[in-house]
Length: 124
Image (cartoon, one colour):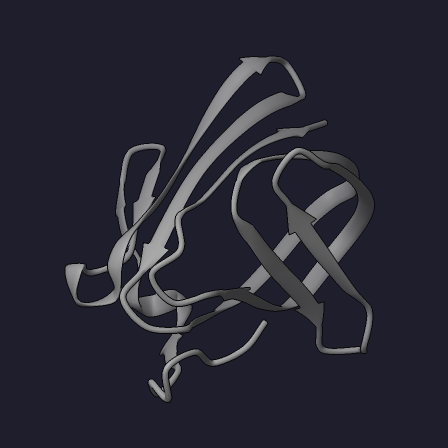
């Protein structure tokens, strides 16, 4: 995922994310970037996300769970990448399903400049 048009990459730290209920949103200076988490049943969550950053975007991500979780990501539009601090990485592509299982994850999400990335995640 390239930098595109020579723009500098924007970095988002967890403390910069705006939270309201089940919705997370980045400040407007980064573009239209949000996600929403909805419990479908006990232990099953649907996460909907839509990112269209103004410049290449790197968002720090840390997720910890009391037990391992299984996540199915449905790429609806665009492409993004996730890289763990320990080296593993995953690419999420339009019209593809990515399945991952983890207990604790620490890494970075990469989104390309001015490209709309829409994803659905089922987590259980």
